[in-house]
Amino acid sequence: MAFGHLVSIPRTSTSIATGGNCWKSKKFVDNYCASSISTRASWQPNRNLITKEYSLKYHISKNHLKAIDGGISSTSDDKIQKTYLVNASSAQSHESEPQAHLESQNSFNTIKKALINVIKFSRLYAFIGMQAGTISASIIAAENFSQISSTLFLKGLLQFMVPFFFMFQYIMGVNQLSDVEIDKINKPYLPLASGDYSYKHALIIVTSCLFMSIGLSWMVGSKPLFWTVIINGALMSAYSVNFPLLRWKRSTILTALSNAISMVGSFNIGPFLHMQTFVLKKAATFPRSMLIGSLVMGCFYVIITLSKDLADVEGDKAAGLKTLAIRLGVKQVFWLCVSLIQMAYGIAIAIGASSPVLWSKIVTVLAHLTMIGYVWNHAVNSIDLSSKESLQSFHMFMFKLVTIESILIQFVR
Image (tube, rainbow, N blue to C red; front, side):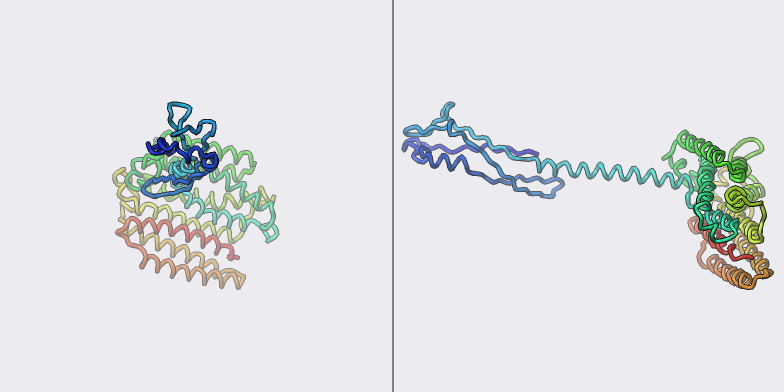
């Protein structure tokens, strides 16, 4: 806000009568014209006073003033006009700061919301949790540490993970496209269910991810990678889409089988064969640790599939689905999941105890005995079966167990 001040020099009859001696003084005019007046320009947005000192200079031309006997006269109508201009550029900059800050904040919030929607839509927590299995299987394929530490190993790992990342986005997306009405009840925070994404927007993302995944895997040239992508996409499409003979999620058995086979192939066998045959150029052989790992991890993938439905009973009932949690009840399925976890650890203990390598036997048995106690304590003391949030946390807990088991598999010999 610019301020302008019009200041006039008072003229009294006395000064005119006396001839205005001081005004006729050349010295006075010189001093007056060279003087500076300081004033304050105040600006108060949102009731916060900001005061700045501005230097105001005005110059009065001596040519416009002339001393007249008995008074002061101007060159126009005997008046002295002096205009003082306030330098308000600093005040204007302060005035624009709140608006600029608001625009910056709005841009930041828009970007933040977009990133959150991407994370929710892609279900990144599941992909990241499963990558422990991919890395573990790739390490098993290598025979020694020098192969693991090589640039070739890292390149091969990325060659598998990047195309499969897009396939994973396709799987998550096509499931949400098929379950919009169910997710409005079970998961209203998802972008498609909440309305942050339109159906057309989500469809474009899903289709793009499908073609990106197939195209990248074809460009890499790895047969294990390409067929992992194709088979995984076909199985999970059959699980989700509502076409004749498909929509396998209506069946508990088909749900468990399709998910377990898809995840074992995607996060264990697929990356193992890719690293062994395509990257390291070796013949396909399955060591003991890989066989045990696939068996134990397969149990975990079945449990992940079952535990996912524990918090979704309300929406699944409304959609007419007959999940195991609806058929048997939440409590029974929860303890079935806990029992299956203990069974998987029991298998690992039995196989580990039969190992001919002493250190492998000790580590495998003791580690899995510890995990049995840990899971039991968590199930008894940390899960409230009447809380949807608590049941969802149990499902998330399974991804932690998958990560831990992916590490323990490395000690099996």
